[in-house]
Image 1 (spheres, one colour):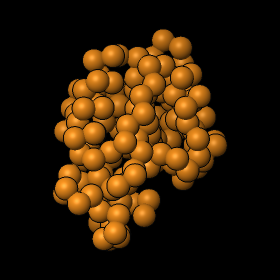
Image 2 (tube, one colour):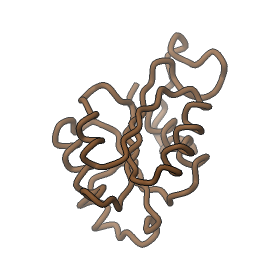
Image 3 (cartoon, helix red, strand yellow):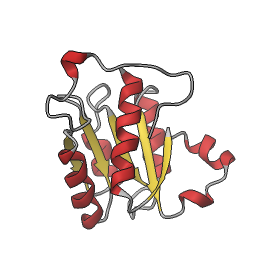
Length: 145
């Protein structure tokens, strides 16, 4: 995934992952999903790319682990039994409006632009595409630095 047109924010060389995996040393990603399979898969691919991954198996657990300024990116499932991803996104953005958030769901293609604006996530992804997830995290992370 490339950066948006007109955005050219290079990583500082001292922060680049020396193994060339794409992540930035010390970069933390919070993944919130009620599916254990998705958590394990997402964590595997993100760790392989050089990220320090924190997992939460529910929206409330994710909100409990979130702290402003700690995570480069938060990845959140849309549909969870305790609270939905849109509520999690709003709570996180309420604490830290600059926090980069990826909302992923099986319904991503069905979300209208109006709904996307209302929810407020930075990126919307189709669920079950872990390699695309890593690319999206890398893209958002570069915008933070």
